[in-house]
Amino acid sequence: MSLVRAELERLSARRFVQLMVVLLVLAFAVTAATTMAGSHKPTASELSSAREQAADARRDLEATHQQCLDRQSGTLPADTDKYFPSDCSEIDPIRQDRLPIAADYLPGVFNFAEQAKPLLYFLIAFLVLFGFLVGASYIGADLTSGGVVNLLLWRPRRLTVLAAKLGTLLGTVLVLALLASVAYLATFWVIGQTAGLPGRLDGDFWRSLGAVHGRGLVLVLLASAVGFAIATLGRHTSAALGAVAAYAVVWELGGRLVLEIVDARRPDQLMLSSHIGAWLGGRAQFFDPELCRGSAGTGYCEGFYTLHGSTALLVLLVLTGGLTAAAFAVFRRRDLI
Image 1 (cartoon, helix red, strand yellow):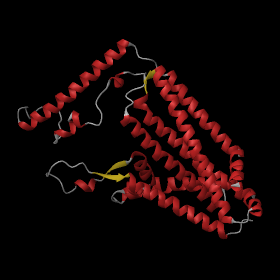
Image 2 (tube, rainbow, N blue to C red):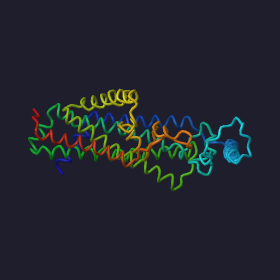
Image 3 (cartoon, helix red, strand yellow):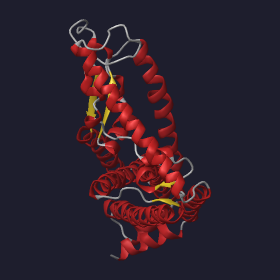
């Protein structure tokens, strides 16, 4: 426990960590202030007008669906200019994920239920960057300055020391992420109550938001471990930054372009960004023209394939686990002087 306590004190005393926490608070404050300045409590006349427009939009959806059914049954002229899908269930209002509501027709009014998930994605993105940079600088600075060598003179067990550093990092990042999430969402909930609309905050909403938050926390911890591992392998903070930049340029941009030129099938599933998106969203769909190549004249074909969140998580865990294991193996044997 004394080793963990010492590492916690070292981590909290780092100026870079303190700077990142300050930037995190500033980003939250700017986002909240901007949202509050651009929102207002809707008047009774605005709400009434919005409800009427939403009702008209729902009636239009129902009328379009009925026209599609009439087109299929032959009671609607076939030469109409209006487009209808071959499968009318695609535009059936009952099967839609979401129908028009009054909040859609209230410009300049913040709706917590509608905006909470996009705001949470922004928070997760910032925390992923935060965890990666803090993880890389935490071990990278110690390896560069010789702090690890001094620590090993006190506790001459390399793997124990490195594990304590990684555990302290992940625990600290998790606590900060939880505190930041609660403060962040609570702030925007208050804005929705006082300067906007709370929206429909039912059980489904909170379960969906909680699922996204949980997946986001896992991604933050994985990013922190990856930054820590790469910096350990490269013995410097810049090694982690360079590795990410090189991957983004060489593979996410260059590799994707080459795969498209050679007409490779499903290049998106080879990209780490696709797996990150699939994990955060629970699933992700990508287009594959080969899926519809042999279905001409046989009916409707979407041409999309699905990347599931469980598969994406497995890829992320294997990558993080491999890098972490390599970092421990290298740290155990190499010269630190």
